[in-house]
Length: 113
Length: 114
Image 1 (cartoon, rainbow over the protein chains, first blue to last red):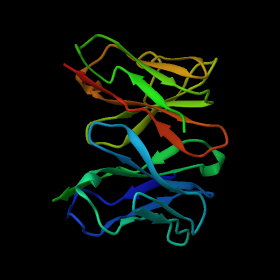
Image 2 (image 1 turned 90 degrees about the horizontal axis):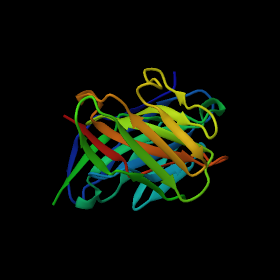
Image 3 (image 1 turned 90 degrees about the vertical axis):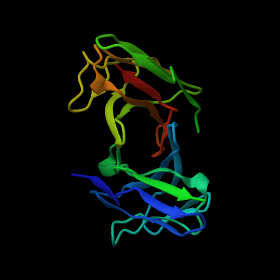
């Protein structure tokens, strides 16, 4: 079945370090891909999205490129801040013309000052 | 995007009682969903709340335990019935506009069952 696999956390980085959180997916058809972020004590917020192969989503310094050949959508940021500490969820939707969104397990990021 | 609010934001409840969570949206939406997020876990879809008809439940969730109402296109409720400590989770309302592939989430209701 369709699924999303993220790298396990927690990921601990120092401020200004480079961030990569890996995400790969399995799906039939051509899904849209998303990264959501959940700050402590809050709900999920859409961080960025990409709807077709080679699209790059970007927001708040974060980027992810839809790679169909490797079925990946890795999240990157060049210089993280303490305020980026949160849980990041990779997700896909639109599989097979359906409407369900499938979420990865989430990756917790801690950024130290 | 639509603004989603949930009430209550958190609650502490006794075993065996029930809690109803409200989700209000500031615009009409076609699809509304209810998710559960257990501590340290990802999101699990409970059901799709259909306006004017019964909700569609995912495997492992039943109407008797999680009755859902959707009286109009801007409002839905989820009731967690006969609660046990295993029901302690964050419950999230979500919506998706027709023709748009992005889901948006409410702030969540943090439920603790003692």
